[in-house]
Structure formats: C-alpha cells, structure tokens
Length: 455
Image (cartoon, rainbow, N blue to C red; front, top):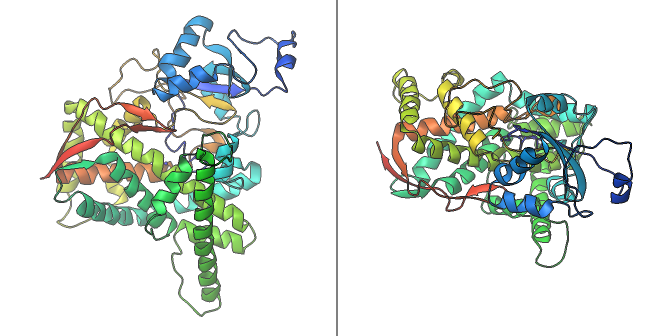
C-alpha cells in the first residue's frame, strides 16, 4: 500500500536498481556535450528513444527479462537509454539503491508523468518536498503508530469477516483478485480514513486509474479524458465529505455535537486544514492518492501471495501451521490482536518473496526509474521464503525520506486476510499458470479464480 505514490511504493520493488532520469534541454545539446562521460547504451531518436521496446516488455510483464537484462549484458550494469522523452541512465545494484534513496530531496526528487500528477493531485504528498512533505507524512504516521495499529486491527478483522460472509460463503469458485480489490478499497476508506463506502465509489476510482499512465490528451474517448471526468466526480463527492467533517469538528469544538472518528486519518487531515497547516485542496488530493496507493497494489500483492503458496505446498503447510498455532491460543470468537500479527513472521516472508517475484509496480516515476527485483546474483533461490537478502538489494516499500509511510497498513491487510482464509477455507487455483497482464499495472488476466470450500 505506498501512500505518496510512495504509498504506491506501497508495494513496490526497488531491486535491481534505480534509473536516474537525467533531463537535458534537448537532443542536440546532449550529443554535443563531448566533455560529459556518458555510459554506453542507445539514446535512439529524439523523444521516442527505446520507449516502444520498454512498453512492449512492460505489457508482457517481462520488463527485466526483455528490456533491462539484455542491455546489462551488452553495456554493463550502468547504461543509457531514452524513455518517454527523457535521456535516462540506468544504474543497477544495491549500492545504487542506497545512494539514490538516501539522497531524495538532495540529488534526486520525485518526478511523475503529467497524467499521474493531474489525476492523483498536484498538491498530494507525491509532489511535496521538504517541510510540506514532512507535515503530511507525519499526519499519516500518527494514524499508523503502534496505538493506531492496535485500534485498526479489530476494525480490519471485522471488515474481512463481513467480506468473506458476503462474498465467499456458499460459493464454489470466486475471483480472488476482483474481490480482494473491493476488500482493500473498503479497508482504506472505512478502517483508515473513516469514510463510508457508497455504491459506485470503487468504479469511479478504477476509471481514474485507467488513465494514470496514459498520454495527457483530452480528446473525446481518450483514456485520460475519461479518467479526468471520473476524477471530477470523486472531487465533488470528497469535497462534500470534507466539508461535513469540518462542520462536525466545529460543532464539537463549540460543545454542540459529538466527536466522530477522532482516531481516523480523515479527522486528522481536516484538523490540519482547520489549523491552517493544509489547504482544502491538499487534503482532497492526499485522500485521493491514499486510496489509490493503499488498495490497488495491495490487492495484487495478496493475490500473488496465494499464487505462490499454491505453487509451493510445503511452504503452505508451514504457513498454515503458523496460523493454526495462533488460533489455538485464542478463545472461541476472540479476534486477532496486533501481538498476533507480530507472530506471523513466516507469512510475511512469503508475502515479501511474492512481491519480489510479482512486483505490484513495474517502475517508479521518480527521477530514478526503479526496475524489477530479478538480478541473478542477488536472488539465486527464487521461491525460497527464508533467505536473507543483501541490504538495499530488495526494498519493496522504498527507502529514505519517501519510504512508504503506509506499509504497515498493507502488511495488516495481507496478514489478516491470509489468516482468515487459510483457517476458514480449503482453496486451490483454477488455473495455476494464469498469465499476468499489465494495463497499466500488473493483474492476473482472468482475475485469479479459486475453488473454495469451508473447513
């Protein structure tokens, strides 16, 4: 879940490395700078460069195998290319990760495509730097502090159980990915933000997502225009919610009403607005960003965790025993606690390996472009869930000042749902070799149908 598209880092692999997009003024100025020692590689034509090859590999979910690895073999670990108009230097390895992640706001800054900025919000944390970034991050971190997580666990457990009762009970086959998207959407809105999910909300957000990485062209029928229109619908809905929350807080301060949702993130954001720390647009843009970052990538990570478990039955047996041990130490009807979550160490190792093998985000639009966690020398035992990894070789939630502020929410979502499913259901994949598609983010092409039966 990373919450500055950072929240989209949520769930985001920083492995092989970072690609530092060095923005030059124009093509001729680059080629004429003889004093600059650029690494080997191909810039290609102005603007186009190797963008088509990049998109082709991304569409097949083979970005490392078909685009990065051949260039490493030809040019070495550091090479130049041109992507989406920007001359880019790709630098591979754990040391590169450490260098760039620890130099955010110093040597590198967040730089997202125009379409992403317009749809996620120009005043969201993904575009903020310095003190403005620290302010929003601090508010989010307060909601995900130890006490905040303790309060959130029973809410998530209640939401997950209701979801299973409504959507799994009595079914033989369900679409794991589609239902998990709905569940994680509900969790971020209701359990974290304190916003009631209404009909058609998820559909509006999904229409926006379809245009996040599309060309920012507003011609009739374009993905970006459809997404922009959906974003306007969301703004109207959220502005009404924000203003009502502000009125509730004002009435409470005047002694005329009740304090509702004081522990929720929306309450804290609106309080920051009342105190002059944030504008209304900043609150709106950050809510929109948080919803995207905290639910979409998390649902894919959950789905791929179950896929990995289905392909490794011995690992599944070990994971199941971990959850049975936790359940056997609880009284009938007693819900999970944060202490129970902390005992799910092996389950979290499985989830982390699943995110490495099937990263929810294929690239990070910072000035470093981050690629997949597949480097042969660093990860020689794919499918092992207990191998130690070299520091900075694998950072699924980023690092440095923009490390995912909400990774704890993603972790709760994954671990709690896995616990409920494996202790309540027998399950198996309908198609164990279901292809993974990308549009614009990776997803199981058939929705990951699974057969289920209650235990």
